[in-house]
Image 1 (cartoon, rainbow, N blue to C red):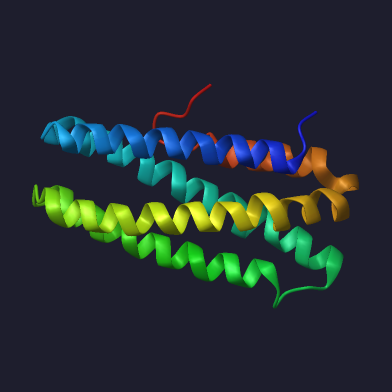
Image 2: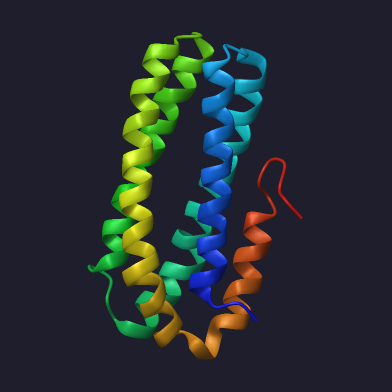
Length: 153
């Protein structure tokens, strides 16, 4: 069985791949492909956020009593990334490559910093404190991620 860290790290990499696909399509000015690829990225990121916010974080907070710690920071960063995704979607709709690039660059930096915090701090804490619940949590998060547009099997 995967650890929480491994499971969610794999999903981070999946989102990175989707992000790169959008970048390639925008660079080629293939707006139809960019729009489709962005829809997959946006869906994947939203489902990832929901899996954490609705399933993982509440379990971690209940087990540790830490509700104002790392999970609070992650929720704030999720909201910031949601705003950037919305701005990027608007730029794509307007076929404004420069505006998209600015939002995408900010989003990429934020994603990288956010993922490092989760992968090196929060997820190992979750694996430690939620070991007795990890099977059920992984199953629930997997079901959440399957709601992603174009989910990878």
